[in-house]
Image 1 (cartoon, rainbow, N blue to C red):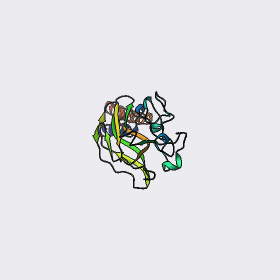
Image 2 (tube, helix red, strand yellow):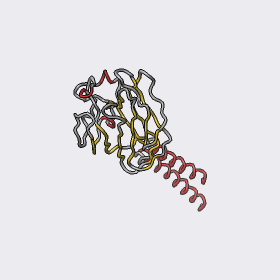
Image 3 (cartoon, rainbow, N blue to C red):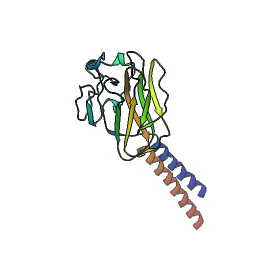
Image 4 (cartoon, rainbow, N blue to C red):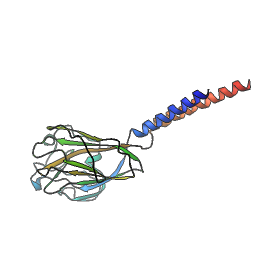
Length: 222
């Protein structure tokens, strides 16, 4: 019975730990320079026009603070920038032009004080119109190695094994000086609060353990 107890507890705790590791963390706000656009030679405007915080959302490179928008709205671009962007600046990408907004830095604020194990960034590396994957990416000021999407494609860049603590983290995109960086989504994965299903599994495990202990005590009494 002791073995049953230990096994039940272990299963429950592993379930909760697994759910916590797999949680997508909540971004409460991010601060950054707005994207650029036609004022600097762009075919369209690549602003974060639906940003919920303060700042000039239709001005190239303007400081945006205290809100969320395209980078965390859950909308991942399904095609190259030239097929999904528009002059109204309402496409899924935010795009920065090196001659105007060099090496844009985005500071993200997360709910609570989680541990960030993984960061995912969705990029356009079409290489059309001067759009390239970043030359380098700095996470909390540290140049962190990554594998860019293949030339002529879009896709995710994933950083794993980060073990970053605290609620505020920065990502800086260092551009190819010839042109643009386009980002459609940023996700943080880590040790958030376990999902309700994980808590249910843990409680079920403790229930199994309790039942085993009661049965053992009953047998011992008889």
